[in-house]
Every structure is written in C-alpha cells, then in structure tokens.
Image (cartoon, rainbow, N blue to C red; front, side):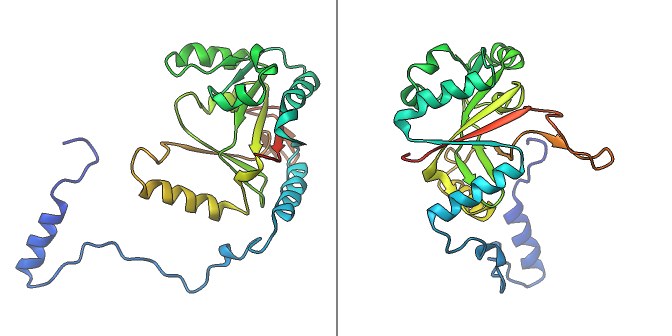
Length: 231
C-alpha cells in the first residue's frame, strides 16, 4: 500500500453500516448554492469589454500589453526583445511559437523535457522567457499555464523578463471560468487534466516593507502580454 492511500474504504463502511442496520450512500453530495455571485462578474461582457478590462488591469499591475495579428507576431516579438535587450531567450517547446514567429524564434533556446537540468541552467542565464497562455482572466489580468512536457514554470520564473503570448480565444471573465475548465478536464480523464497549474499576474512584487511596492523581487522584473487577436 502506498503512503497516504485508503484501500477497501467502501467495503469497510458498508460492513459497519450493516452491523448498525443502516444503509450507506457513498455518492458524494452535490453542492447546490443559493447564491453564486461569482457567476455574475462580467457575465454579459462582450469580447471587446473583456479585452478592455484586461488591458486596464494589466497596466495597474505594471505589465506591458502589446496587441497584434498573428501575421505580425514575428515583428512584435522582435521589437519587444529589442526593448527588453533580450539576447538570450528560452521558450516553451511549443510548435505554435515556431509556426507563428518562424524568423524570430530561430534564435531561441527551447525547453527540453528530456534534459530538464540543462534547460533550467539556460533559464537561469536567459534574458527573456517566452510562454503561451492556456487561459487569461480579464478581471485580474492573470494568465493561466498548464503544466506539460516542455512547458516548465521555470521559463516564466527564472529569466529576467517574461513574455506571454495570449491568443484572444483563451480570454475569459475570471477565475470561475478557469476552474470550470479544469473541472471538465478532470472529468474527461486523468491524462486530460494537467498535473500542475500556474496563475501569473504580472511581474513579481512585494509591498511588505513599509507598504512600499517593489517590483521584480523574486521573479521576472518585466512582463509583457502579447494579445494575438485572430487566434
């Protein structure tokens, strides 16, 4: 038996219930809440209203927002990397980056799931880490990244700066919708559900010292969101 596991739970409970002359229902109760205010936030917002909310909140959390069509993503990334003085870049091993930015991505190092230690060493020295968001939350300007081979959280944490590519199609109102999608993935089977989920809201910061905000404390100093409108 593995540590932390429960075996023969159902048989044990049924035996106890039988001795007590009771029936036992092991079906987990379905929670039905009378009030669900979380469903009302940005409920009727249009896509453009969600975008505007995302832009506004992103500026509050000291995050650059750049928007483009997929045909211009190559040039957009190049200009961002020039602005951030990004010479060494590590990116997720995601074919979409190579497809959407075929020219700029030629200079990237790619996360190698078979050699994580080597990739981590590259991330430590990298000027910029590049990722693709699996979801984006308009209410808090948060990006959601699912753990997967070739998609280490190290890419968004260790380099000096972080660029997140966000297809407009993954934009949702808030955490409520992200949780629902995760629940659906979980119901679809173990392999469909990510082993880890990262929620990233702009650059790292702290205001613990006399309430003075300091950005870039324990992670990327600068973060840019690249909203791609036709994806």
